[in-house]
Image 1: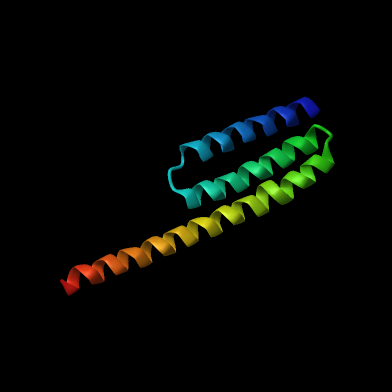
Image 2: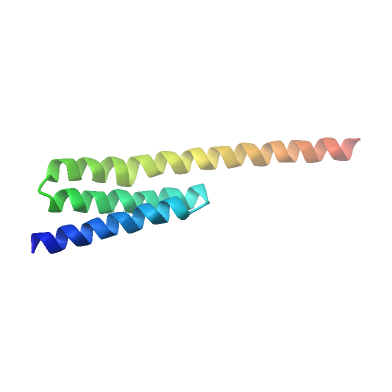
Length: 93
């Protein structure tokens, strides 16, 4: 039974990692990265490493994707404000 759960968890990790690589939008990558962290936490728990699984759950599924989403939001906001400044300069000429 443990071999089946381990195999399924490994397939889930492989699918989530592939989805993270194939996504082009950074915000979607962060969401898929969160799912990858959850899959890794399940894999670690199935492999009888619950302490590592809990750490992965906190860091890989919550904190890291949140930091990426906040960074993407900040970069997009700065890009929009700079684009607005460029538009205003073009109109004033």
